Length: 178
Length: 452
Image (cartoon, rainbow over all chains, first blue to last red; front, side, top):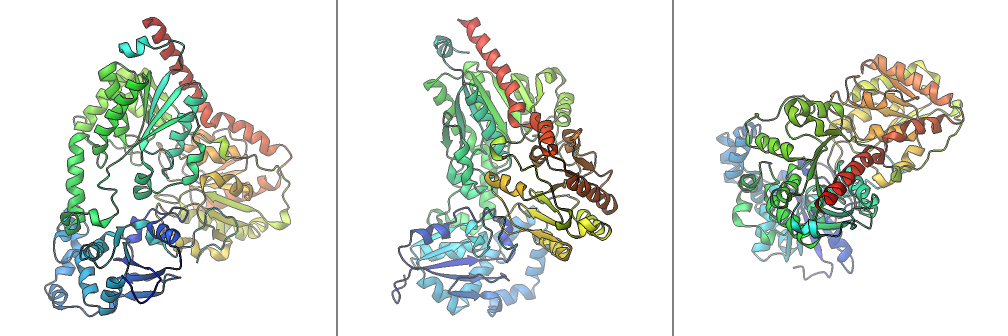
């Protein structure tokens, strides 16, 4: 829990840039993030840790992108032996995806290794009050954070992936898109 | 029917259990049929109990349209049954180590387990609580009829259950189809597969089976010829409650027109052809050159717009094409009032009618039907007085149709909108539903009298 500031801190985790296709949220729906924000008695810090997410998210106090984090020995070895290339081929059929999910190239494990190798991300995760995994690959990191006692709450909520998307319901006058 | 029912007061309102997983506030398109059907029974004087899933289920799995709940008839009693609580669990403190290790494997095993109960991926775990709820409701207030609305097909379980244990008649309402792939026309699974055998038993025992269009009804009549006389078309329709009357106004040719599309863009729709046709039409018509084309609704089924569709619409931004985001069903009326003519863009399938075709007709506006004539919507709109259809959805034909539609919009005389709306009146949901509701009431009442 953060002790240096009175503002509660929520950290959103994005494990893939394209996994928002799993999200079926409309802005009118209440995501876990919105609920936390509504329930908070004062201002809240919202930060993001992401991998492969190209878009920017307005209103967040910190956005740590893990894409440039140095690969560790495991990832370099897996790359050298062609495991990542093989896993790409495996994603094209159901059994392949299942096998991918069981091994070291599973997106969840890749994301967690990237977090572990990034001190800023680790610090942010440890100092958070709430962690929201917006996609399946980030559930492992969020689960570990709550089970190790770093955070009080951890949720898996794909609706929170819509943060920063400016769809308003309804309107005939809003700008087309941001 | 059993003694409990026989002993009941013959004067009491007939009691129907209506089963629909996708009931408000679910956001699925089929939700409006479920909402309207339960309301229609209530208006006809039935005691109505709806069995559906919990609100949390929709928040987690399908998304919600919170406004839709306000349209449930207050006489309808809604019983919400928790659906697959483990799958809907969002608090990661409650996730097991195995689930975190491989969510995919966990899901797979979970689905296998639920499939043992009922042969429908992902919904089998709902069978037992659904059957138990139906028994409980029947014990408290004897049930005269069960109507199950699929998909999911597990919604047929309470009907089968009460028929088996108490002889209660049931109706199966197919919004879609269990074993017909509506886009390809191919059979799903083999005739001797588990779900096919179950469907055969279901159809054999059903009082009636409802289908959304003639083509789907006919396919099932071929599959189950012995029961074909019990098959009825109960088409989708427009919901008058959501559509206020549009103003019958004279348009100014100097100001250009607003063409509109309202719906979800997905699948094999001729969108590119439409946009290219729009560009050609603007080059050839001074009215179209001053006009704009507005898309409202969802680009794909997900929260973020489908990237390919966004890119495609962006390509035509300089041609007066804009996308103004999704609209709640409860506000479509306001959106239609901004449009002067409508574009009906649909994929080709003789089994797919779409929901928006009924709504479009109810606006009374000119409609450019930019879909292949084989599409089931063709039959729905046959005879609509302000219809302009393409012989096939190529850019050239689309351009010609748009120019003709614009001319119709500009030539609009007082009363044109109202005449078209009158034509569409039989396409309302009530007009589709009430004949069946009345027929079922007559049958239930006569059964009661016979048993007295």
